[in-house]
Length: 410
Image (cartoon, rainbow, N blue to C red):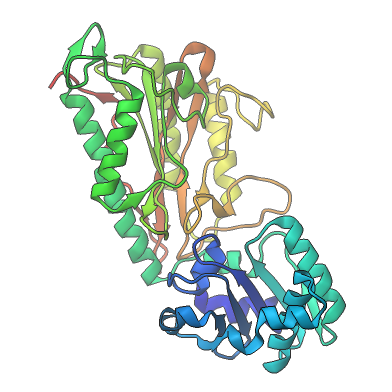
């Protein structure tokens, strides 16, 4: 949570932190600005002090909404400073930051965060190490200050995520209702006009339902059928016809229009009926899903749940990433991931060396076991989002029906 940042800075022995970027492209900047839309700003966090926001005067009214101490960047005019430094933009930007930190007496160990091309970031940080006499430039590769704060959500963030979840669940229900209402001919659903309904038609319907609910899909969606459902991230062939009896993996991960917190949910459907093989795989996935949910507990290592899921699937005869590293059939991915301003964010649930993450109040995460058999023509995944409240109780944000078979033909 944002309220944890001072504590996290102390744990890292950071005297200050600097974040650079725009809220539209950087989850870090969106988070620090509390969702206020700002372009190309600098945030300076000083332990025990009010955060500082350096912004364009064109955005002065929006800057005030952040609650930070606001200073226009014209106080340190980048163009003029760059000319003073001989015309190289890198030199000008480094000198501008040096002056900002000096004017606010920022010194000691300072962490740097934000968004940008990796080469530009490396060049700027290297130059800052050369010009900042009283500052030790600190960079973090994983478990960094801001992403660590974002692992747990406060009440305002949870309210935003619950609102997005409600709208996302409504879209999925609308898609299910549309598919169930279509007439059937030659073992296929029919579109208005009598042609076979295609995945492309369904994706356009999903888009329209999102527009109605002011949702956007910056990373698209997954709506894959049959063999393609056996490839976990196959987005689906838009020309494929909606055939009865084949598994459909519908993975939907929208956010509000203009940015904000994501929801992430997956349903596996089979139109009209399911084959015995798909039903058996779905039953195994559902059993693993229920076992994980029943075992959720504050303080338990997240990696325990991935190990549990692998063991459950292996007992049913499925290959997993634990028994068969690199497998492309059976259980081929991790069980879960954190969710928030990014679709995939900490905590990780994978048992890699050094992963000591545990479930904590305020955590929001997916639960998404799956089985994939491309050569056999099917895949199955069930995914809900769970959050842990302040009392350590776990709640689903994804009440949409999990049933495998969708009745069809109106």
